[in-house]
Image (tube, rainbow, N blue to C red; front, side, top):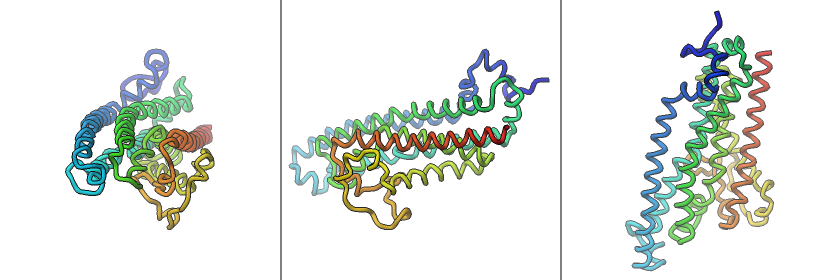
Length: 301
């Protein structure tokens, strides 16, 4: 008798009738629905808060720019900046940690349930089985994150250009942090989950190790200021270093930050900084996926 996967669908049949990606979507449809509902709720909140910038403009026109920035009103610069930072805290790094947790759980469960043994008995190779799952899951999570990044960055850019935010670190964080690198962090989370799940072969161990590895790699990137090597045009603009070593990092919610670096940037540096940061993060993700495939090949040789 040919071994089959849950749901009475053999991989031989899956190869001809149902894409491997479809199998993954069926297996994770419950968490995907929950994530979709979360994305919809967050998108509605971001869109609603974007409309509130009109109130800030009206207040500034009424009381003057100085009073708007330095006095206390319901829609002044302080309250609007705090609101924007709060909106950003839900998406600058949490999607990456969610991706790490879910991918680590899914990959570790393949070994916990001994489903990999069934894969070996089918026409689909283990490499194809795992890479298809990781790629599909990564694509789904990135697609879910894209509308949040677009809506948030639209709001941050609008406020920055109209000078509606408090000047300083919060304004720079709100403007420069979210963007393509947010999506790259999601890919890094998927790669970290794939690596830890394959290496540890335990869903519960990967549950802890995957987000920890994602955070640690991000912290090293931020603390080392490797982005200056990938974007040397901003090197001469950056001065100062936050003391305290790795444990002295600053944070934007759960995302390691370097406000000395961000405060040195100008709006024209946005795309260069984002692209350079994204390339570094995606390089780390590629190395982790390569390591996961090497572990997989060695264990199933």
